[in-house]
Image 1 (tube, one colour):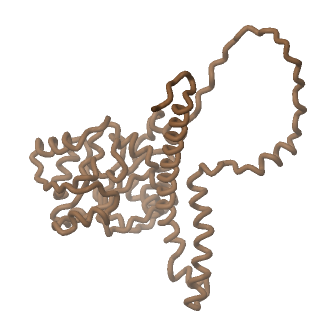
Image 2: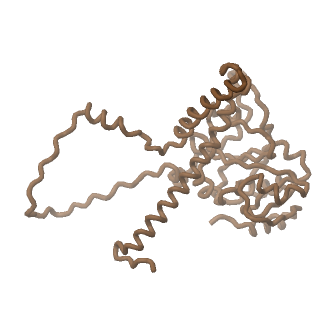
Image 3: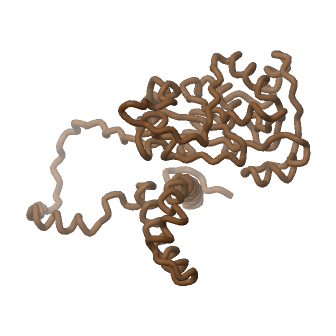
Length: 325
């Protein structure tokens, strides 16, 4: 179990950190949060949980209107293009131990998140107070960046403020400026298994052979390699489980259609329109969001399927279990 909201607020009071508390209904987006606290003078923030190819996690906390380009951020971290993307919800629950919509620097209060890197928008320093959820999204607290720093230092995190909208050249003579913020290690095996579960092989049981009266069943003839390959090729290798490929396929369909319709209505060649609108950059920014939504819907589907199967099992009374009344 992760730390609670009350434990966090008690720690802030213990550190004599000045903050204001606003209770409101549960919110999942910055827009919903703004309806309840937007008129109190604080700065709204957006908080992203990102993951790289080595399963290392990053929290990016920025002002709501700060533009965060994933490709540029990946290069600045020294991870190459597409090096970071939105982390799945499993990481949010298993590592940060907070529900959906509660990613903030305060999630680092949980010991399970000690290896998560934190990148803070330098724009936060220019605001008198900034809004964050304290481990739950039915409360918002407002505090200054200096008081946020005080909390982070108390849990052993050195605050790192960066210009998230900068686009410095990265190359042979210009090393990545944010490489020092890359976590030193990947997730532990238990955390990594959340995304890539490896089924354990069933133990072999050397049971004694028993004679039966059943007729002997002859083995089916072996299928040639060519036949096997042709039959396997009809089935997608990933069976729809690869979220990145799915997102790419969706964008491959949507963007050409959009480009074609916009070109006709604006009477501009598609090549020129692509350059004007910088569609490739937009596509790069849209892909992580689409992957995140796909992950969320996939998790919801898995959960719904599990409950449906479990209820069916109970109703049928399988395995000697009494059916639910």
